[in-house]
Amino acid sequence: MAVQASQAADTPPSPWLTVVRAVVLLTAGISVLLTAFAWPSVRSSVHDVPIAVAGPATAVEQISTALGQRLPGGFEIIEVAGTAAAERLIRDRQVYGAIDVSSGTPQVIMASAAGAAVAQTLQSLATALNQAQTQGTGTAIAVRDLVALPADDPRGAGLAAGALPLVMGGLLAPLLLTRLVRGTARRVTGALTFAITGGLAAAAILQFWLGSLNGSYWANSGAIALTIAATSLSILGLESLLGVAGFGLGAVVMMLIGNPLSGAATAPEMLPGWSGVLGQLLPPGAGGQLLRSTAFFDGRGVTHSVVVLVAWLALGVVLCLAACLRVRGTATVAAGLPQAAASPASPTRPRPGDVVASESETPLSLR
Image: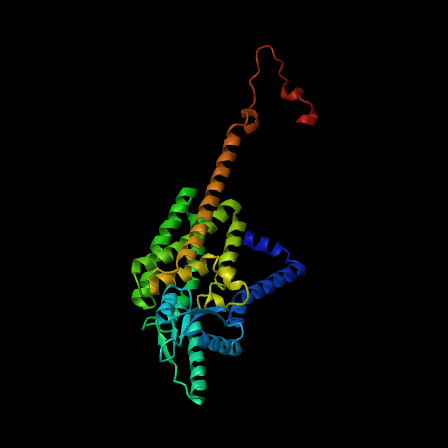
């Protein structure tokens, strides 16, 4: 203990320049974190949200004009003939809702399960249209929720809050596996097994305890498992190939880019600029949309999400194989080196007739 105290006392304090560098690095870090998580939420707004308008061409044109005046650039209008066509687009996840004036009673059809924020926008839109109708002679517009959220979680809070834990689970798997398990095949097997067990556990919590999910439990478990597998395998592959830098790169992509841009709390179309499109190309965003489809829309509209997740999973497997082949190639090259180059030269025994100098005859400079 005295020796350690003496060594601590003898160690000089760090230069003030090191303190300055640490403060600058911490300031930059908190700025990046705040920007990554706050910017999408603060700049979130309705723009290019696809909705259907059902009715005669004249009525559709009038409604489109009114929507453009109230929320310029807020909606992408898809014209349909009647109520059935509008409902089909909603159930297929091609639109978030519809304004139906094809029958005698005008109505706004929404799907809160597709995105609570968009549903609230359509609800407020119906209120505004009702006020306009009240001032005139028109009929009041009714509101109907075609695909509603569960009664136990009418705001979709569990689904929105569950996005971050799933990303963190995908980060935790490669972090622990690379430190506790040796061998690429065993690590990949461990990540895939964890994805299955984690998907079963997370779906059970969200569906049976919190009541945030409907639909088939097994389909929901599969959606969550595929999301975890795509996240953990891609990061595991980067870590296998690049080491700690690969893990850091994967964590930045998934946590600081993928999670804030997933659109889980609102909708991808409500995120600013191109960020919503980018978010759907990363596992957190694709996984969130896949889970909504399996839980509330009978699996409709899953093609894009499944393709994205499978691509990330395959990328992780390829990176793991590349790292494994690189290690084997290095070992093969090392094994093929000459024995003299691979190990230090061993002393040779003198042969008969060789003159061996004694220690006393060895020059002083060689002793």
